[in-house]
Amino acid sequence: GVQSLGGLLGALIAFGVTEKTFCFHYDSNPLTPNNYWGSCFILEMFFTMALCGTVLTAGTSFDAPNHYFGFAIGGTVLAGATACGGFDQGSFNPAVTLGINIANYFSAANAKLGVTDGSIDTRTPDAGSWVTFLVAPMIGAALAAAIFRGTRSEEYLEETLVQAIDVKPSDTVEAGDLK
Image (cartoon, rainbow, N blue to C red; front, top):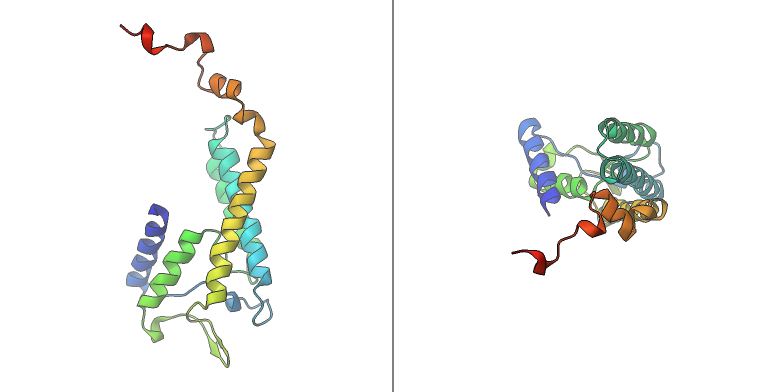
Protein backbone atom coordinates (compact mmCIF):
# COMPACT_ATOMS: atom_id res chain seq x y z
CA GLY A 1 0.00 0.00 0.00
CA VAL A 2 2.11 2.86 1.32
CA GLN A 3 5.32 1.58 -0.23
CA SER A 4 3.60 1.24 -3.63
CA LEU A 5 2.29 4.79 -3.31
CA GLY A 6 5.82 5.95 -2.48
CA GLY A 7 7.19 4.11 -5.52
CA LEU A 8 4.61 5.75 -7.77
CA LEU A 9 5.16 9.20 -6.27
CA GLY A 10 8.94 8.87 -6.64
CA ALA A 11 8.62 7.73 -10.25
CA LEU A 12 6.25 10.59 -11.09
CA ILE A 13 8.60 13.13 -9.50
CA ALA A 14 11.52 11.69 -11.49
CA PHE A 15 9.42 11.92 -14.65
CA GLY A 16 8.49 15.51 -13.83
CA VAL A 17 12.12 16.49 -13.30
CA THR A 18 13.74 14.58 -16.19
CA GLU A 19 10.80 14.45 -18.62
CA LYS A 20 11.86 10.84 -19.38
CA THR A 21 10.58 7.49 -18.20
CA PHE A 22 11.58 3.87 -18.55
CA CYS A 23 9.98 0.60 -17.60
CA PHE A 24 11.13 -2.71 -16.22
CA HIS A 25 11.21 -4.97 -19.26
CA TYR A 26 13.11 -8.25 -19.52
CA ASP A 27 14.22 -7.48 -23.11
CA SER A 28 16.03 -4.30 -21.97
CA ASN A 29 19.10 -6.28 -20.95
CA PRO A 30 21.94 -6.32 -23.47
CA LEU A 31 23.56 -9.54 -22.22
CA THR A 32 20.50 -11.79 -22.46
CA PRO A 33 18.89 -13.29 -25.56
CA ASN A 34 15.72 -11.70 -26.92
CA ASN A 35 12.43 -12.90 -25.44
CA TYR A 36 14.24 -14.60 -22.56
CA TRP A 37 12.88 -13.76 -19.14
CA GLY A 38 14.52 -16.57 -17.15
CA SER A 39 17.66 -14.74 -16.07
CA CYS A 40 15.65 -11.70 -14.95
CA PHE A 41 13.29 -13.88 -12.94
CA ILE A 42 16.08 -15.79 -11.17
CA LEU A 43 18.19 -12.68 -10.49
CA GLU A 44 15.19 -10.71 -9.21
CA MET A 45 14.21 -13.59 -6.96
CA PHE A 46 17.72 -14.27 -5.66
CA PHE A 47 18.76 -10.69 -4.95
CA THR A 48 15.37 -9.78 -3.45
CA MET A 49 15.85 -12.78 -1.17
CA ALA A 50 19.34 -11.52 -0.27
CA LEU A 51 18.07 -7.99 0.37
CA CYS A 52 15.09 -9.10 2.47
CA GLY A 53 17.27 -11.56 4.37
CA THR A 54 19.73 -8.79 5.16
CA VAL A 55 16.97 -6.45 6.34
CA LEU A 56 15.43 -9.17 8.51
CA THR A 57 18.74 -10.26 10.02
CA ALA A 58 20.45 -6.89 10.49
CA GLY A 59 17.40 -4.77 11.17
CA THR A 60 14.77 -6.82 12.98
CA SER A 61 16.38 -9.72 14.84
CA PHE A 62 17.01 -9.68 18.57
CA ASP A 63 20.57 -8.46 18.12
CA ALA A 64 19.29 -5.37 16.29
CA PRO A 65 19.58 -2.43 16.37
CA ASN A 66 23.24 -2.53 15.64
CA HIS A 67 25.74 -0.18 14.07
CA TYR A 68 26.13 -1.95 10.76
CA PHE A 69 22.61 -2.57 9.48
CA GLY A 70 22.63 0.41 7.09
CA PHE A 71 25.99 -0.62 5.67
CA ALA A 72 24.86 -4.25 5.31
CA ILE A 73 21.65 -3.29 3.50
CA GLY A 74 23.43 -0.78 1.24
CA GLY A 75 26.15 -3.31 0.48
CA THR A 76 23.53 -5.88 -0.51
CA VAL A 77 21.87 -3.41 -2.88
CA LEU A 78 25.26 -2.52 -4.37
CA ALA A 79 26.17 -6.19 -4.80
CA GLY A 80 22.83 -6.91 -6.47
CA ALA A 81 23.11 -3.96 -8.85
CA THR A 82 26.70 -4.80 -9.75
CA ALA A 83 26.10 -8.52 -10.22
CA CYS A 84 22.93 -8.02 -12.28
CA GLY A 85 24.33 -5.32 -14.57
CA GLY A 86 23.56 -6.22 -18.17
CA PHE A 87 21.44 -9.25 -17.21
CA ASP A 88 18.65 -7.62 -15.20
CA GLN A 89 17.47 -4.08 -14.49
CA GLY A 90 17.50 -4.72 -10.75
CA SER A 91 14.16 -3.68 -9.28
CA PHE A 92 14.28 -6.07 -6.27
CA ASN A 93 11.01 -4.53 -5.03
CA PRO A 94 7.49 -4.89 -6.46
CA ALA A 95 6.59 -1.37 -5.26
CA VAL A 96 9.43 0.09 -7.32
CA THR A 97 8.31 -1.89 -10.37
CA LEU A 98 4.73 -0.75 -9.90
CA GLY A 99 5.69 2.93 -9.56
CA ILE A 100 8.16 3.02 -12.46
CA ASN A 101 5.93 1.07 -14.85
CA ILE A 102 2.78 3.06 -14.07
CA ALA A 103 4.64 6.37 -14.42
CA ASN A 104 5.83 5.07 -17.79
CA TYR A 105 2.21 4.90 -18.97
CA PHE A 106 1.77 8.64 -18.25
CA SER A 107 4.58 9.71 -20.57
CA ALA A 108 4.42 10.46 -24.27
CA ALA A 109 6.08 8.05 -26.70
CA ASN A 110 9.06 10.37 -27.29
CA ALA A 111 9.75 10.54 -23.52
CA LYS A 112 10.03 6.76 -23.07
CA LEU A 113 13.50 5.30 -22.88
CA GLY A 114 13.76 1.97 -24.65
CA VAL A 115 14.05 0.49 -28.11
CA THR A 116 11.71 -0.68 -30.81
CA ASP A 117 13.32 -3.35 -32.95
CA GLY A 118 10.96 -5.49 -34.99
CA SER A 119 8.77 -7.42 -32.59
CA ILE A 120 10.62 -6.13 -29.51
CA ASP A 121 9.39 -2.92 -27.90
CA THR A 122 10.96 -2.15 -24.53
CA ARG A 123 9.40 1.31 -24.20
CA THR A 124 6.37 -0.09 -22.32
CA PRO A 125 6.14 -3.23 -20.19
CA ASP A 126 4.40 -6.28 -21.59
CA ALA A 127 2.48 -8.83 -19.52
CA GLY A 128 5.55 -11.06 -19.13
CA SER A 129 7.57 -8.17 -17.76
CA TRP A 130 4.87 -7.32 -15.24
CA VAL A 131 4.81 -10.92 -14.05
CA THR A 132 8.61 -11.24 -13.95
CA PHE A 133 9.26 -8.03 -12.01
CA LEU A 134 6.29 -8.39 -9.63
CA VAL A 135 6.16 -12.12 -8.88
CA ALA A 136 9.90 -12.92 -8.69
CA PRO A 137 10.57 -10.42 -5.86
CA MET A 138 7.54 -11.70 -3.96
CA ILE A 139 8.86 -15.26 -4.18
CA GLY A 140 12.30 -14.03 -3.10
CA ALA A 141 10.80 -12.24 -0.09
CA ALA A 142 8.87 -15.35 0.93
CA LEU A 143 12.04 -17.45 0.66
CA ALA A 144 13.95 -14.92 2.78
CA ALA A 145 11.24 -15.02 5.44
CA ALA A 146 11.28 -18.82 5.46
CA ILE A 147 15.07 -18.95 5.74
CA PHE A 148 15.06 -16.31 8.49
CA ARG A 149 12.40 -18.19 10.41
CA GLY A 150 14.26 -21.48 9.94
CA THR A 151 17.66 -20.14 11.00
CA ARG A 152 16.38 -17.87 13.78
CA SER A 153 13.71 -20.15 15.20
CA GLU A 154 14.91 -19.48 18.75
CA GLU A 155 13.55 -15.94 18.41
CA TYR A 156 10.04 -17.36 18.03
CA LEU A 157 9.93 -19.40 21.24
CA GLU A 158 7.63 -17.92 23.89
CA GLU A 159 10.26 -17.92 26.65
CA THR A 160 12.71 -16.15 24.33
CA LEU A 161 10.13 -13.49 23.53
CA VAL A 162 9.60 -12.86 27.24
CA GLN A 163 13.36 -12.53 27.79
CA ALA A 164 13.72 -10.24 24.79
CA ILE A 165 11.39 -7.65 26.25
CA ASP A 166 13.07 -8.11 29.65
CA VAL A 167 9.96 -9.18 31.51
CA LYS A 168 10.01 -12.20 33.77
CA PRO A 169 6.85 -14.32 33.96
CA SER A 170 6.65 -13.49 37.70
CA ASP A 171 6.65 -9.74 36.85
CA THR A 172 3.43 -9.91 34.87
CA VAL A 173 0.44 -8.15 36.31
CA GLU A 174 -2.95 -9.74 36.31
CA ALA A 175 -6.04 -7.61 35.71
CA GLY A 176 -7.32 -8.37 39.26
CA ASP A 177 -4.09 -7.07 40.80
CA LEU A 178 -4.74 -3.50 39.62
CA LYS A 179 -6.58 -1.36 42.18
